[in-house]
Figure 1 (tube, rainbow, N blue to C red):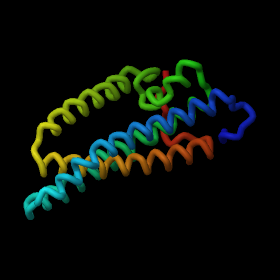
Figure 2: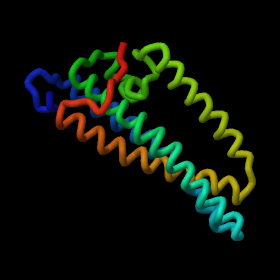
Figure 3: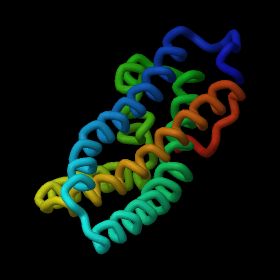
Figure 4: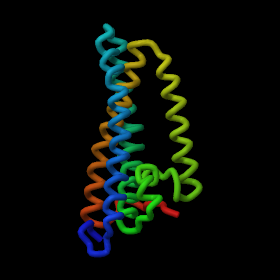
Length: 175
């Protein structure tokens, strides 16, 4: 059911757009906070070992966090849940659409545990990385930025694809 279907309500259109935009905004905000320390780290006089670590961290984060986490799992699920909102919105889900799309509620127990657990883990890692000195702080932040850029691209791709075709990229896992 493409987005221009007669059965789609204005609330559904708002909820789907707010869900995708809100998640993209959160990812962009993270990039905006991490890019300055990453650039500072690169300007701090890195030696060959630092540049090697930089390349390895960017590759590992690009593959692990970006490709495996955000591109293959997170972005398709967010898009599928936005498509679900388009078709079956409720006022509460529409208001909290970014959090609904990220599976923080109205999901099976296993998905809820994963979503909240990953978020808690990310918060702990952010605190730990914040304590690192440059250039290491910048190296880790640069790797995270690589992964987040991949995730943003995947979110745009799957979001547009799902809403235009009406076919979800994956199971939305909605309760």
